[in-house]
Image 1: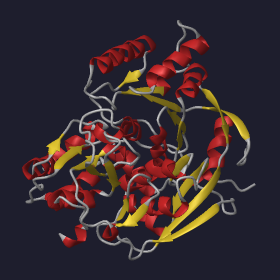
Image 2: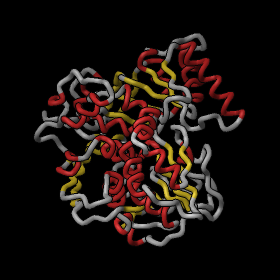
Image 3: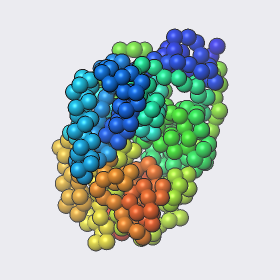
Length: 420
């Protein structure tokens, strides 16, 4: 029976051949928790396994502090203290405040093709850029995973998004995925695996693939995946890891069943998700001139070195508009150091931007960089819901790093093609 990559991964994890629609009790390869979701997960774990119990495998559980880092309140500080004690007690790896955003740390240090991974965060699906099946789960389900190392799943159907054509200048993976979300809608891929394919995706570097997989959840996807290839192996080598498996086995079989969606990106301009829905997507030309108060370049979606370089090349020698607060946050310490060594941080600071230590920042409205009532944020992050970055009376526009940088210079949404 021809299988999709998703069916292959679940077959291995459950110990039997399965197809989409089957229910399985599958072994988990890795589990991720962070400072916001971990407390409830630990509570559920204690209720399931008992107060003295150990997690099923300490080597397969990873903790990161990223949402409220450094601690922005006494409550957050106390929470961090409690979680530090738990990780010491359990022998779990804790990146604490030094590492960066959990999702970036996972792909840099832990994720391998073919794995089945769960995280107590919806954007766990980003790890699929390396050919894993990774999905977000609730804290109660995570409590079960911490106790047993297993979880029930319904094996999802797969949608294959075939992206072909030629990308225009200043158009990136962020624009592709925004366009796809706009095409199928916020619920167009409910509980389905979004497999990105086609000649354009095959040429995309890992950073763009991560962006696309990260936002699969914004169309209801259970996971986002790019089938592993040479670019995958090269990325793993670049972060000091080498995949010892056979990526040829981690591809969908010819004749496997998919729902198909086609997109030709030739001639497509940068895309913008306008308030207050991620699937409310238009071309940048339709919103040019919109006045802006804050520009945020960062998050697990677009906080990598490649994203920072795109923005820095536009901001080089320029000055941020007087009405703009530009906040730049690399996704991890590794990405920060790469940007630092290449002089990108200097460019942002000289332009008038604020560069912060790796963390989520204003992305979910839980830390610094929030917007006030009536203010407008242009952001490279993944969600523009009401109140997501501060006041519910504020507005958020989602864009790629080039549009964000151009907007910071002019103080209004700007097509970067008109600058450089």
